[in-house]
Length: 327
Image 1 (cartoon, rainbow, N blue to C red):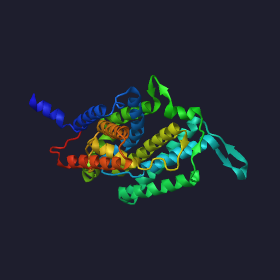
Image 2: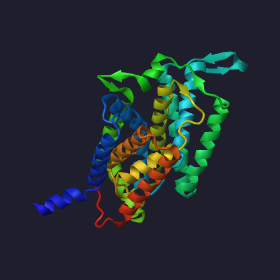
Image 3: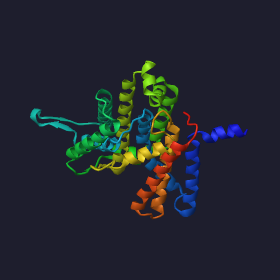
Image 4: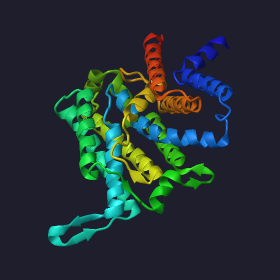
């Protein structure tokens, strides 16, 4: 019995889950506004965006990589969707104007995310650029393209169809939460039950052994970064829809919250160990922490300090934990 109990507690997702429950309890005691229905849905809505990004980040980190460009890809994808929704696309030389439907705008945003993500993967696999450097470059490139596309000004007035994605409700639950739930369910199944999911774990565990066993490592890595770009675009659509505008500086710093959620959820920075379930818990911890600190009127500067120590503590626990195992 004791052995079985120890096996359960040692699973990577259990420790962050216990930390989440303790944090919820502490915040409920410290702030009377925390444990309310309105705040509960507010936290879930905020977490949904980070969760979409973090699912992609989990797969990237499981391969032993990193993606610093997710916030900028979010901004550019959202800006393109907003621009096409409001202004369409014109060809003055041909006296031609192309309008976009709601679904056309979504498709365009997803294609932008896929293109930028695949470019990251191509640079990493084809030219052997370290993931940190390749995605740091994309962070700057995508942010610059966002500024050029928007000319530094927000794109506003996107209409009810667009805003429903970010502010609407379905069956008593906010739409962003439904989107995040679908993404989590799909990729949890993908990672645990498909051959490609097992390959991602294998590459992070031992890249050379994966190559020798016949796994097309470069193809898998390329697809992982492409998926991370697509999920960043989904998050960009949600942020743009919620604000009813595309902000040029949208997504700034989101890569840090995403990496934090993945690490706190038990995914190892060295790759090969982690889970989507752990990332969900990690994203909830970040969301509860952000929300609780705001309700407690903690200075934004101190919030950054506190989150930094939380991330550092999670990394230290990852390094000192004995008997690391995949789940």
